[in-house]
Length: 377
Image (cartoon, rainbow, N blue to C red; front, side, top):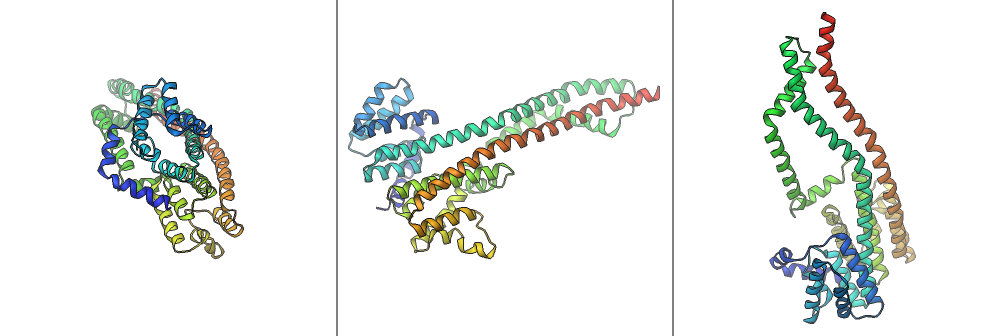
């Protein structure tokens, strides 16, 4: 069975119905989702039937949202529908990738392992987000406090200093006059500036999530200095891990690629994977589509690095593609850890220098007229 194609057709058949379901679907945190999946996989792997597993879980949880979610899943299962169908009714929680993996588990009889696969993916995603946030906390605190301090300084302090110099009839240097002009502009347009920032954030959110523009946003973030490399590495790690796991469970390469593309959460890369799927369905080797034959000509595929294409080629030749993909996924995860540390280390001094430069400029602008007054005296 072509799992990838089947699940995509299933989702498309929902159409507007799926969108309306999303409005009434329960929303839970990533942490709660991981706990739910962990408990479910443990019960199923212990030999407890799926329906009974959920009945046990609903009595063990106290969280109202999770109880509601489990209750809705039990209701679907009681109607004779599959777990995949139950998950399809909660698009706010379970992604296309999740549902594809569940379908794979139901057909192969390895549902517990399938749920464990989803749980591991979510754990890695949560861990990476935590590391990135941890690396950015200190720089962001410095930036936030600096913006607040500079804003207060420009709006409340500079006007008083301006009045003092005006009363003293001091000729202001260009730097000081520029700072005063900026202060006046802020005072007169603070509401418009705040409104503009809010509108920008809203538009950015729409641009980021709208189906027609998301692909451009996903392409843009890959080109951001420091962060672009990290995001690309995360995508490759997820791709290798998902593809390796699916192949290891006996899913054919076409379907494995189709399902893996949904795990990436990046439309730009997903578009490229569609080319791989199309090529593989025509009998072209995956390594060839990744550009392995172009390496000798000094060219490199911008989506898939030489190392990955070479590993895939070796896997195709030896029949060990799945374990090699899982191994290189682990390597990418280690590189992600190092990148996160390096980003934090690189950003901190840059932020300190930039913020220090701005504050230093403001202090200089204030003091220059004072020094001129002293020299005149």
